[in-house]
Length: 240
Image (cartoon, rainbow, N blue to C red; front, side, top):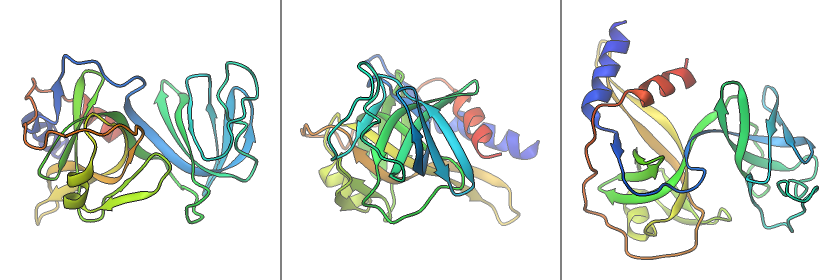
Protein backbone atom coordinates (compact mmCIF):
# COMPACT_ATOMS: atom_id res chain seq x y z
CA UNK A 1 0.00 0.00 0.00
CA UNK A 2 2.87 2.38 0.84
CA UNK A 3 4.34 1.63 -2.60
CA UNK A 4 1.04 2.47 -4.35
CA UNK A 5 0.50 5.67 -2.37
CA UNK A 6 4.06 6.81 -3.05
CA UNK A 7 3.77 6.08 -6.76
CA UNK A 8 0.36 7.72 -7.00
CA UNK A 9 1.70 10.89 -5.42
CA UNK A 10 4.58 10.84 -7.90
CA UNK A 11 2.17 10.67 -10.84
CA UNK A 12 0.06 13.50 -9.44
CA UNK A 13 3.13 15.73 -9.15
CA UNK A 14 4.84 14.70 -12.38
CA UNK A 15 2.30 16.05 -14.86
CA UNK A 16 3.36 13.36 -17.30
CA UNK A 17 0.04 13.67 -19.14
CA UNK A 18 -1.09 16.99 -20.55
CA UNK A 19 -4.18 18.06 -22.42
CA UNK A 20 -4.02 19.05 -26.05
CA UNK A 21 -6.64 20.68 -28.22
CA UNK A 22 -4.99 19.46 -31.41
CA UNK A 23 -6.00 16.26 -33.13
CA UNK A 24 -3.97 13.16 -32.37
CA UNK A 25 -2.40 10.91 -34.96
CA UNK A 26 -4.93 8.30 -36.14
CA UNK A 27 -4.68 5.04 -34.21
CA UNK A 28 -2.37 6.67 -31.67
CA UNK A 29 -2.14 5.53 -28.07
CA UNK A 30 -0.51 3.19 -25.59
CA UNK A 31 0.27 -0.21 -27.07
CA UNK A 32 1.78 -3.57 -26.18
CA UNK A 33 4.30 -5.20 -28.48
CA UNK A 34 6.05 -8.52 -29.07
CA UNK A 35 8.65 -9.93 -31.45
CA UNK A 36 7.72 -13.36 -32.75
CA UNK A 37 7.89 -15.78 -35.65
CA UNK A 38 4.82 -16.09 -37.85
CA UNK A 39 3.09 -19.44 -37.29
CA UNK A 40 -0.14 -18.77 -39.16
CA UNK A 41 -1.73 -15.86 -41.01
CA UNK A 42 -5.22 -15.19 -42.31
CA UNK A 43 -7.26 -12.16 -43.42
CA UNK A 44 -8.45 -11.72 -39.83
CA UNK A 45 -5.63 -12.95 -37.60
CA UNK A 46 -1.89 -13.31 -37.11
CA UNK A 47 -0.44 -16.05 -34.89
CA UNK A 48 3.09 -15.68 -33.57
CA UNK A 49 5.45 -18.07 -31.83
CA UNK A 50 7.03 -16.35 -28.84
CA UNK A 51 9.81 -17.41 -26.54
CA UNK A 52 7.21 -19.01 -24.30
CA UNK A 53 4.06 -20.10 -26.14
CA UNK A 54 2.07 -18.56 -28.98
CA UNK A 55 -0.04 -15.44 -29.34
CA UNK A 56 -2.93 -14.88 -31.75
CA UNK A 57 -3.82 -11.30 -32.66
CA UNK A 58 -6.63 -9.89 -34.76
CA UNK A 59 -5.94 -7.83 -37.89
CA UNK A 60 -8.15 -5.85 -40.24
CA UNK A 61 -7.97 -3.21 -42.95
CA UNK A 62 -6.72 -0.59 -40.45
CA UNK A 63 -3.64 -2.65 -39.55
CA UNK A 64 -0.51 -0.95 -40.87
CA UNK A 65 2.21 -3.17 -42.31
CA UNK A 66 5.81 -1.96 -42.54
CA UNK A 67 7.91 -4.13 -44.84
CA UNK A 68 10.20 -3.85 -47.84
CA UNK A 69 8.49 -6.90 -49.33
CA UNK A 70 5.69 -6.45 -51.88
CA UNK A 71 2.38 -5.98 -50.07
CA UNK A 72 0.05 -8.92 -50.59
CA UNK A 73 -3.57 -8.55 -49.50
CA UNK A 74 -5.18 -11.93 -48.92
CA UNK A 75 -8.70 -10.55 -49.14
CA UNK A 76 -9.72 -7.11 -50.48
CA UNK A 77 -10.24 -4.74 -47.55
CA UNK A 78 -8.07 -6.76 -45.15
CA UNK A 79 -4.54 -6.10 -43.91
CA UNK A 80 -1.71 -7.09 -46.30
CA UNK A 81 -0.52 -9.77 -43.88
CA UNK A 82 0.09 -12.09 -46.82
CA UNK A 83 3.44 -10.32 -47.14
CA UNK A 84 4.74 -12.52 -44.31
CA UNK A 85 5.47 -16.18 -44.84
CA UNK A 86 5.40 -18.70 -42.01
CA UNK A 87 8.66 -18.36 -40.11
CA UNK A 88 9.02 -14.61 -40.75
CA UNK A 89 10.26 -12.57 -37.79
CA UNK A 90 8.00 -9.60 -37.05
CA UNK A 91 7.15 -7.03 -34.41
CA UNK A 92 3.46 -6.70 -33.61
CA UNK A 93 2.28 -3.57 -31.81
CA UNK A 94 -1.26 -4.05 -30.61
CA UNK A 95 -4.08 -2.71 -28.47
CA UNK A 96 -5.00 -4.94 -25.55
CA UNK A 97 -8.42 -3.94 -24.28
CA UNK A 98 -11.01 -6.07 -22.53
CA UNK A 99 -9.30 -9.26 -23.61
CA UNK A 100 -9.23 -8.27 -27.28
CA UNK A 101 -5.81 -7.91 -28.92
CA UNK A 102 -5.96 -5.92 -32.16
CA UNK A 103 -2.80 -5.23 -34.15
CA UNK A 104 -2.16 -1.58 -35.03
CA UNK A 105 1.25 -1.99 -36.69
CA UNK A 106 3.20 -5.02 -37.95
CA UNK A 107 6.91 -4.43 -38.58
CA UNK A 108 9.02 -6.77 -40.70
CA UNK A 109 11.97 -7.60 -38.41
CA UNK A 110 13.68 -10.10 -40.69
CA UNK A 111 16.91 -8.09 -40.65
CA UNK A 112 17.17 -8.08 -36.86
CA UNK A 113 19.04 -10.65 -34.76
CA UNK A 114 16.83 -13.67 -34.13
CA UNK A 115 15.13 -13.34 -30.76
CA UNK A 116 11.60 -14.11 -29.62
CA UNK A 117 9.83 -12.19 -26.88
CA UNK A 118 9.07 -14.04 -23.66
CA UNK A 119 6.64 -11.35 -22.57
CA UNK A 120 5.00 -8.31 -24.10
CA UNK A 121 6.73 -4.95 -23.91
CA UNK A 122 5.30 -1.43 -24.01
CA UNK A 123 5.16 1.03 -26.88
CA UNK A 124 3.36 4.22 -27.81
CA UNK A 125 2.34 5.59 -31.18
CA UNK A 126 1.64 9.30 -31.68
CA UNK A 127 2.72 12.62 -33.12
CA UNK A 128 5.86 14.41 -31.94
CA UNK A 129 4.85 17.49 -29.98
CA UNK A 130 8.25 18.81 -28.92
CA UNK A 131 11.65 17.83 -27.54
CA UNK A 132 13.05 19.42 -24.39
CA UNK A 133 16.41 18.31 -23.02
CA UNK A 134 16.25 14.49 -23.11
CA UNK A 135 12.46 14.30 -23.07
CA UNK A 136 10.33 13.58 -26.13
CA UNK A 137 6.72 14.67 -25.75
CA UNK A 138 4.30 12.66 -27.89
CA UNK A 139 0.71 13.69 -28.55
CA UNK A 140 -1.77 10.84 -28.16
CA UNK A 141 -5.53 10.93 -27.74
CA UNK A 142 -5.51 14.68 -27.08
CA UNK A 143 -2.94 14.24 -24.34
CA UNK A 144 0.83 14.03 -24.19
CA UNK A 145 3.09 11.20 -23.13
CA UNK A 146 6.60 12.21 -22.03
CA UNK A 147 9.36 9.68 -22.71
CA UNK A 148 12.98 10.15 -21.64
CA UNK A 149 15.89 9.31 -23.94
CA UNK A 150 19.33 8.18 -22.78
CA UNK A 151 22.65 7.32 -24.43
CA UNK A 152 21.32 3.89 -25.48
CA UNK A 153 18.17 5.13 -27.21
CA UNK A 154 18.22 4.65 -30.99
CA UNK A 155 16.36 6.51 -33.72
CA UNK A 156 15.44 4.50 -36.80
CA UNK A 157 13.56 5.39 -39.95
CA UNK A 158 10.37 3.67 -41.09
CA UNK A 159 12.30 0.73 -42.56
CA UNK A 160 14.45 0.26 -39.45
CA UNK A 161 17.69 1.89 -40.63
CA UNK A 162 19.52 3.56 -37.73
CA UNK A 163 19.68 7.34 -38.13
CA UNK A 164 21.05 8.34 -34.72
CA UNK A 165 21.98 6.96 -31.31
CA UNK A 166 21.88 8.74 -27.97
CA UNK A 167 19.70 11.58 -26.74
CA UNK A 168 21.88 14.44 -28.04
CA UNK A 169 22.23 13.07 -31.56
CA UNK A 170 18.54 12.14 -31.78
CA UNK A 171 17.40 15.58 -30.62
CA UNK A 172 19.38 17.20 -33.44
CA UNK A 173 17.69 15.23 -36.23
CA UNK A 174 14.25 14.23 -34.97
CA UNK A 175 11.74 15.51 -37.54
CA UNK A 176 9.00 17.85 -36.39
CA UNK A 177 5.43 16.61 -36.11
CA UNK A 178 6.63 13.14 -37.07
CA UNK A 179 4.39 10.14 -36.60
CA UNK A 180 6.40 8.11 -34.07
CA UNK A 181 6.38 4.56 -32.75
CA UNK A 182 8.38 4.37 -29.51
CA UNK A 183 9.23 1.27 -27.50
CA UNK A 184 9.94 1.97 -23.86
CA UNK A 185 10.51 0.41 -20.44
CA UNK A 186 9.79 1.90 -17.01
CA UNK A 187 12.77 3.13 -15.02
CA UNK A 188 12.09 3.04 -11.30
CA UNK A 189 13.94 5.51 -9.06
CA UNK A 190 14.46 4.01 -5.60
CA UNK A 191 15.82 5.09 -2.25
CA UNK A 192 18.39 3.07 -0.33
CA UNK A 193 15.64 1.30 1.60
CA UNK A 194 14.09 0.04 -1.63
CA UNK A 195 11.11 2.41 -1.64
CA UNK A 196 10.08 3.89 -4.99
CA UNK A 197 10.29 7.67 -5.10
CA UNK A 198 9.53 8.23 -8.78
CA UNK A 199 9.68 6.66 -12.21
CA UNK A 200 9.86 7.66 -15.83
CA UNK A 201 9.37 6.07 -19.24
CA UNK A 202 12.76 5.24 -20.76
CA UNK A 203 12.86 5.22 -24.59
CA UNK A 204 14.50 2.16 -26.14
CA UNK A 205 13.81 2.77 -29.84
CA UNK A 206 12.13 5.65 -31.66
CA UNK A 207 10.85 4.80 -35.15
CA UNK A 208 9.75 7.60 -37.48
CA UNK A 209 6.77 6.41 -39.47
CA UNK A 210 6.61 9.54 -41.66
CA UNK A 211 9.16 10.91 -44.09
CA UNK A 212 8.31 14.62 -43.85
CA UNK A 213 10.88 16.85 -42.16
CA UNK A 214 10.68 20.34 -40.69
CA UNK A 215 12.09 22.35 -37.80
CA UNK A 216 11.20 20.86 -34.45
CA UNK A 217 10.49 22.92 -31.34
CA UNK A 218 13.14 21.86 -28.83
CA UNK A 219 12.43 24.47 -26.18
CA UNK A 220 8.69 24.86 -25.60
CA UNK A 221 7.84 23.30 -22.22
CA UNK A 222 4.93 20.84 -22.04
CA UNK A 223 1.56 22.24 -21.08
CA UNK A 224 0.66 21.21 -17.53
CA UNK A 225 -2.66 19.48 -17.08
CA UNK A 226 -4.74 18.48 -14.09
CA UNK A 227 -3.55 15.37 -12.25
CA UNK A 228 -4.37 12.18 -14.07
CA UNK A 229 -3.57 8.76 -12.64
CA UNK A 230 -4.78 6.69 -15.61
CA UNK A 231 -1.16 6.07 -16.62
CA UNK A 232 -0.35 4.78 -13.14
CA UNK A 233 -3.15 2.22 -13.23
CA UNK A 234 -2.29 1.15 -16.77
CA UNK A 235 1.42 0.85 -15.98
CA UNK A 236 0.88 -1.23 -12.83
CA UNK A 237 -1.49 -3.52 -14.73
CA UNK A 238 1.19 -4.28 -17.33
CA UNK A 239 3.99 -5.01 -14.87
CA UNK A 240 2.31 -7.05 -12.14
